[in-house]
Structure formats: C-alpha cells, structure tokens
Image (cartoon, rainbow over all chains, first blue to last red; front, side, top):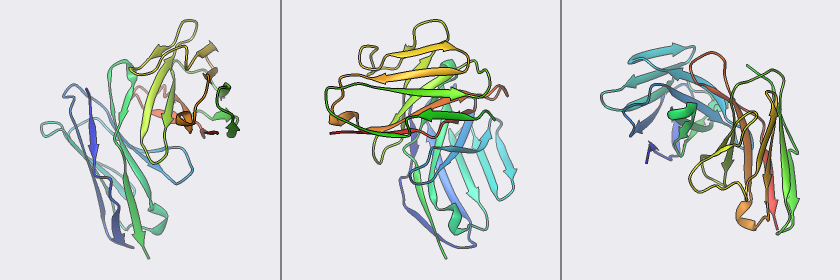
Length: 110
Length: 115
C-alpha cells in the first residue's frame, strides 16, 4: 500500500513568518511530487511540483525533496492570511496516478 | 492549463437514486481521472477514465456502483448509482497535463448530498 503521510495540523503561524509543511512517502519508485492548495469549498489548485533532489523556488514558495529520506516539504515565506488553506502533498504512482496525503491545515494569523 | 468544468456543481438526492456527473475540458487530454473527497478527508482516486475502453477502477470501487464513460478526449461522465448517505462527498474530475511532469489539474467539483 503506497502511502503519503502529512501532519494534519492545524499549523498556526503569524503573518510574515515562514510556514513549513512536511510530507513523507513510502514508495521509493515515486518520481514526481506535488503540492496542492485547497481553500474551503474549492477544488485543489496545483502550486508546486518537484522531481529532483534539492530545492525548487517559485516566488514565496520553496519545495524541497530528499529522495533518500523519502521526504518532501513546502516552505511558504512571508506568510499571508490568504495562504490559510489545506495543503495537500501528492506523489505520483504507476499509470500517472497520484496518491494524496491527508493534508495539513495552515492558519496564518494577522 | 486546461479549463475544466463540471455539472452539476451540487445536488441533493434521495437514497436509492442515481446521479450522473459530467466533466468537460476545453482541449483534448490523454488521461482523465475521477476522485472522491469525503467530508474532512483527502482525495481518493475512484478510477481512470479511458477513452474508447472501460475505465480502470481502484481497489474498493466497482463499475456497477460508479459507471464511467469517456466517449472522446474532452468529455467524461461518472454515475453514482443506487446512492446511500455514505456517498455524500465531493466528486472531482482531473486531467493529466501534457507537460510531461504528470501534474493533474482539477475541475471545480460536484458536491453531492444523499438524504
């Protein structure tokens, strides 16, 4: 059973701080890793993907991947109240399918 | 990314009835998927909708309960059959990007409540 684990939170950070979201996965064969943001009542929105070890930066977001440790993280710098949402980690599986973690609720306090 | 629409956006149904959800994409896509998101839960893949052939179902999901059609490369339907209150969920279709990184983009979802 391929699994993706996330801390459900909620993770509370003050406005302007760095939010750090973490994810571990069980399938060593996974090649692509995704972070989706889901606002309450909305569908998931892709915000980052990463497939090479190391860091990938896009604006205020940085995705980090460590395949040896089977660990993916998402850093959000200068957190804003509008970043408050559930963040879903997803890992590719065979047949182009994605396996999702349970999601981490992020709350940014102004 | 592709623009994806779903109909209906929400519905309230009686137990024992069936509902068909439509997913329309504004461009041809190779792969389409159907997910379920139960209240407070993450996304669970129901099946991969294959164009011109039977859908590929994940463990725990069967064709009799969730028949899927995909008549062309821009359209798919998911039917939730003989519904019970346990089927109350958000149903989402997604499409595989043509960018080669296996990213998926989601439609707006259909919120189903079964009484």
